[in-house]
Length: 189
Image 1 (tube, rainbow, N blue to C red):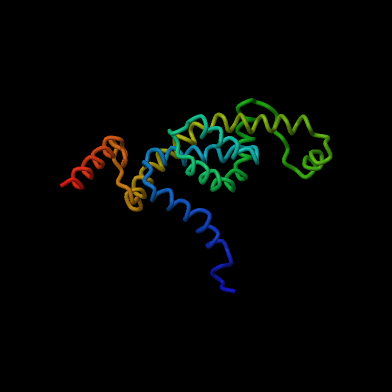
Image 2 (cartoon, helix red, strand yellow; image 1 turned 120 degrees about the vertical axis):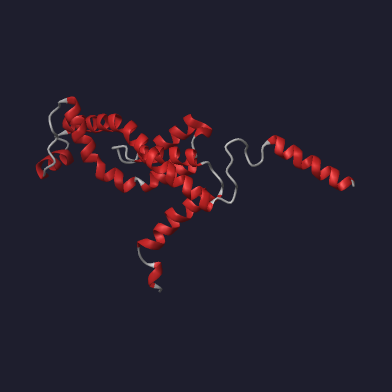
């Protein structure tokens, strides 16, 4: 068995790089890609694990054509390890904002959680983490958009097979009519 097939690099290439290249080659607008990716990452760091795909699906349904669904879902997928690492910072940020007691992150607290003795404290800590995310989310979204926009402008320019135009879609109705008219005239001559 080849060593190149074992490890993180082939997995990352198949799950992240290849889908990203497919998205870029289809000719999406850089602003839409930057917004969609920022939205996917922002939703992807939601502090309750397992809910992010549902949140992204709702955002895609609500925003419709204003976001690029594959980019939102890819960014959500990429954000999963980040989500796990940000649960505690969102929890502590929410505790600071609410002025509530700190949830102890100790072995004894974990034992109480697992035995069901700390249900109220767990519920309160989840509420604090949600509050921390709700306050931080607009700033995360805006910061990521500002960072990602120039990156996507460069990437779309480099990898897109369809020319990007701010005024007209590649196959707008007027463009299709013009091509059909020219084709008709050329065949009659």
